Length: 317
Ligand code: ASP
Ligand code: MG
Image (tube, rainbow, N blue to C red; front, side, top):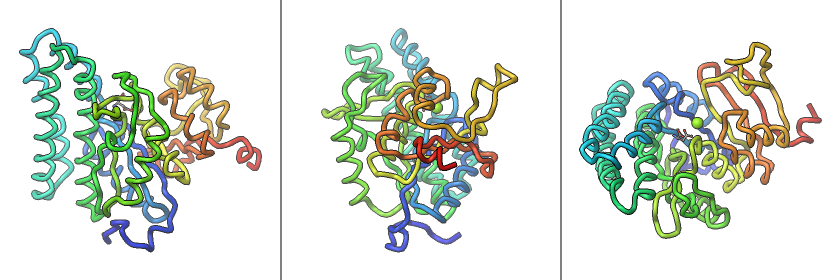
């Protein structure tokens, strides 16, 4: 495949689009390979900024790891190994190239040391801050893996830790984005960044004094929306394992109807009420900037999914 490093001026004229992949989409080697294909396809028409969650189930495991390590330091090593095993297995099944596997292994070891250190701190006075470092490990282990998989496909990428981009307050575990410094950081980064398609950790932010924070469970949606807002992106795409949004939970209600288009006001009310399976604040920055959101299905990319659009767009059909 041709190299698509996005350093050329030819691509600079294409609009920025933020593509967010959820944990179930990248929870298996097949899922990661599929995500790589979808990113490649997107490069035909836009300059993607990719935001990714932890592999499915990992954040839940890290929550448990933090709890158990607080009560019993003896469990730190077992948890660190367990998380390491999950990502090593994913890497082994995703990356055929030995050099890329070795590169990922270096990143993985460094991140596991951080995880181990943070788990050890769970029993100490800085547990709230340490817990966010623990929780962020899922995304921080995923980003270099997806970046390596993109590189293997011929699409030069750049792994980015959102701590350098998303500024928050110090409310660990459910931090609030500080909009003005975040916009400044994101724009400065995007203007001056090195070549390569950016792959950014969802869920993660940082305080003004350099402490890792997390945005609340499901926070990768919000991370993607924040980046879309700061970059005035053409749109955000939320790639997930469902075919779009439904009027009700389709698993619980047989009369649930798929939604092809909804306006922001309606979607935001539903999101705030916890109905659309997205972080409750996801639509705030998108609405503010009038940036549409498409919810799309990774294993049925041709399906229309759901479009969340400003009301006038909706009226135009
Ligand atoms: N990994 C985090 C969580 O499970 C964030 C996300 O997936 O959006 O809550
Ligand atoms: Mg999620």
